[in-house]
Length: 104
Image 1 (cartoon, rainbow, N blue to C red):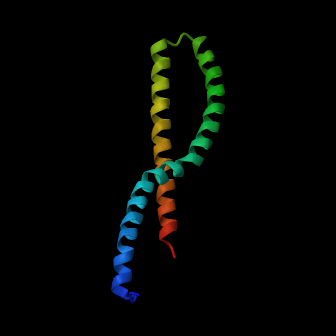
Image 2 (image 1 turned 45 degrees about the vertical axis):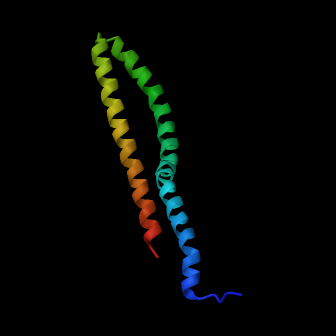
Image 3 (image 1 turned 90 degrees about the vertical axis):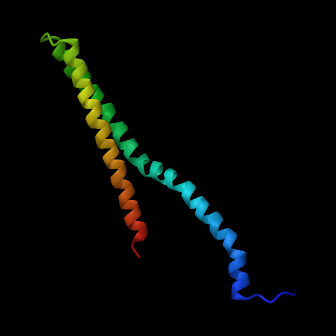
């Protein structure tokens, strides 16, 4: 029977450590996506409510002779701002998770 020494134990654990590091590397992108799920849910709820409000507002615009180009520009601006806001919120959630993981 072979005697278990610190060196043999380290040699046995080395492949497992490498495999664990590979698994953690694979998980990193998934964690970032998971951080955004609650934000996506909140954003979807807000968007549904705002969509209902915007439909009424755009219908009112149509009655004041606003052009289709002006409406398209408004949509474009709103889409850009919402996308930037969602990205910043996702990045903040990721940073908060990383900070909480590092705190003892």
